[in-house]
Image 1 (cartoon, rainbow, N blue to C red):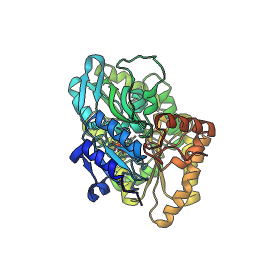
Image 2: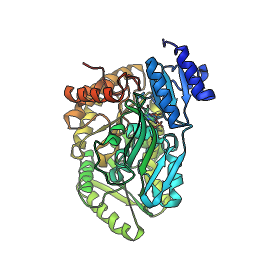
Image 3: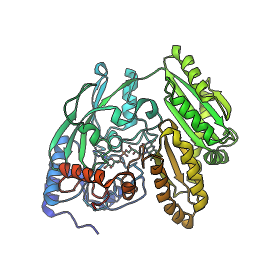
Image 4: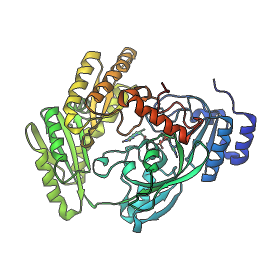
Length: 460
Ligand SMILES: Cc1cc2nc3c(=O)[nH]c(=O)nc-3n(C[C@H](O)[C@H](O)[C@H](O)COP(=O)(O)OP(=O)(O)OC[C@H]3O[C@@H](n4cnc5c(N)ncnc54)[C@H](O)[C@@H]3O)c2cc1C
């Protein structure tokens, strides 16, 4: 049960935000949960619109030791925006201006509530894009993308938000405003606080403005689909593709179990194979044939069953149909799917997939593996169909993470930690590393008011 907000704090916040502060029960309920399906009621929801409001709000909450939970659109999968200790949810959805598009310097300055998809639409007529491309792009905010270091298929070539952000403006848990980073593509002026804040899940500071690095949009795209007899052959092809000079802009893997599921849902257009790669190459039309040829050669080798190249938009859609059928197929089978996004070095993908098959048999749970193979980042989705399977799937998780760490991998490639993976952090990071992270947290947020209970496990 939450302690209600102190009356003086409530009065201060009402004065600061007027009708943009809500303590209405319905509104609190709407901001209690996120895509993790966990929930806990906040005491109030603040719809901030300016940096100064954020600063004043954090200062006021700090005085009373009240938690402050930043929120974009709540699409994260890890419970990162669930106000587990109550407090004030700070929604950035009304702080959504594109402040400046500056193609000459290849940058955009945006407020955190801008949706990823809206930014891409604004950039397209200028011939640019911002590379981070989560599938949720039409519904997720730039602030959320930065705070989770979210990416998607394009990260294999263009990187994640850490590689595509020049600078930030933010408010620390102390209530202090600061800027970090640069408006330039080079900079060697002190510690890199920009990269530190990216991926910090609202536990160090609230981001109020971001300077994003833009990339010119290539005008050509070629899509290929390669099927293999087994996972090992597909994984070796991934290593070969990544070892030659033409980096694809998507290199997605689907294992045999996921293909079977997609076929049952999507029909005969989904191939029967031991594993499949979806490969995309982008560039200028004059160079595209050579680039596609180089990648196709690398994809060919022992275990290849078929390599199809799309020549039209319809053919491209057909090749992607297996991947597209996968999401609805998983939902139909298991409304309680456990969605992980582990990462291993590319050469260890076969060991990961073999290990997952072993765990699936041992715990008698359906598990599918698919995702961003070029980064070694696989969505390992556990699909329990009833309560008994759900209990077994939870038990399987610990062994999955232990397997990933034993393969020199890590817990999350793009979804982050939140509450869901917080207690597994000691598997991935040593006590000394976690101790340093706690001390960094103390420097930004000495009273621990920013997004408490997330990312870092309790101190030893
Ligand atoms: C259908 C679907 C597909 C998805 N596909 C992908 C995918 O392909 N790749 C991927 O990486 N993720 C994916 N996700 C997960 C999710 O969309 C991303 O994590 C996204 O970046 C979250 O953005 P959001 O605006 O919803 O943030 P929220 O969920 O609201 O917040 C996420 C985190 O960011 C913090 N935060 C938000 N705004 C700020 C701010 N201004 N300052 C400081 N901290 C802040 C929050 O406190 C929280 O810790 C998917 C989700 C769905 C529902």
